[in-house]
Image (cartoon, rainbow, N blue to C red):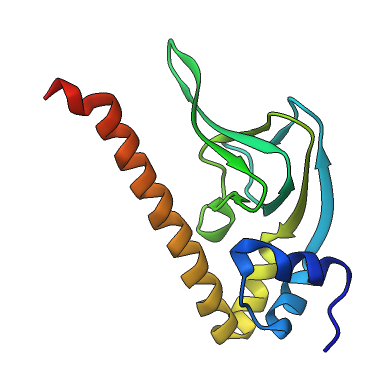
Length: 155
């Protein structure tokens, strides 16, 4: 199978390293290129979570809104990372904001399209879940380290 266009970008993205070309092709059928200028939001807390983003170029801030404090950045994503996991589990709503800190180019993957393909091909769905769970565990660990850094000295 020859890979081209979005399939190639997907297969070359670090998140999908080593994925079969057939699976890259499945994902490519749900994908489109997108661009976000500095300050533009990829998604906002509470809105429907219909997609996720493979960041190809740029930086994206993940932010929570706290009463009386405003936006709090909890993670900055760079090229080679993924923005968005809320598309994966009901009720499919964003739990935080994602804002482009500079011109950001990404591949947007339609979540409903991908969920349907995973339902039709459980091996593919399992492969996707393993990749997303690995990413989530890594981010949870990073958050734990950040909490220790902030609060650990006070113990």
